[in-house]
Length: 231
Ligand SMILES: NC(=O)c1ccc[n+]([C@@H]2O[C@H](COP(=O)([O-])OP(=O)(O)OC[C@H]3O[C@@H](n4cnc5c(N)ncnc54)[C@H](OP(=O)(O)O)[C@@H]3O)[C@@H](O)[C@H]2O)c1
Image (cartoon, rainbow, N blue to C red; front, side, top):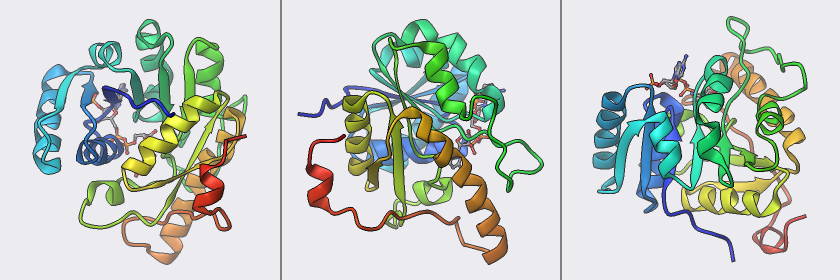
C-alpha cells in the first residue's frame, strides 16, 4: 500500500507554482506547511491558501522549519535558488521524499532548452544528497495558472521521475489526489526530458497564445496499466 504523508511542505510556496501546488494539496485534504525565506510571508500565504482551499490545515514557517516538520518536501523555487536551498535544508531531509519541480530556465532565453552540465537540475540534487534522500521530480510541466484555479480540471499529465520506485508511487498518488494524472516516467536521469519540455511549452505558448499555458498528455496509458506494479 502506498504511504500517505502526514504533512507536506511546499518550499517557495509563496510563489506562483508553489501556491498552486499547495492549494490543490490542501483542497485534497492534505496538511500543508508553506516554507519561505520569511516566516511572515509564509504565514500570510498559508492563510490565503487555507481560506481558498477551505482547509484549516495550512500553516507557514521558514523553509528550514517546514522541511524539518514535513515527511514529504516539495521544492518550488527558481533554478538560481534551488541548490542553495537544498544545502540549507539537507540535514532535515534524511530519509524523506524530496519532490523537485525546478526547471533550469536561464533567462532571458527561457523558450530554449538549456540543461545544466550533468544533464538535469534534479539529477544534480539527487547526486548531491545521495541515496539517503528519496528525490523525485514532478510538476515541471504543469502551469501555475491551472493549478491555482480550483474551478477547472487541469488538462495535463504530470511526469514523475525518480530512482526510488516506492517514492515515485507516493508522488503519483499525491498527484492523483490533487486531480492530476501522475505518470511513472522512469529514473531521475529522465527528469532531463521533463525539464526540457518546459521550454518547448513556453515556445508553444508564445506561438499559439495558449490561455493559462499548454500542457502535455501521454496517450495509451490506461487506468489498468497504471495500477499494475511500477517498473
Ligand atoms: N510558474 C509556473 O507556471 C511553473 C510551472 C512549472 C514549474 N515551475 C518551476 O517551479 C519553480 C518556481 O516557479 P515560480 O514561477 O513559482 O517562481 P517564483 O514565483 O519566481 O518563486 C517562487 C518562490 O521562490 C522563492 N525564491 C525566489 N528567489 C529565491 C532565492 N534567491 N532564494 C530562495 N528562495 C527564493 C520565493 O519565496 P520567498 O521570497 O517567500 O522565499 C518565491 O515566492 C521554478 O523552478 C519553475 O521553473 C514553474
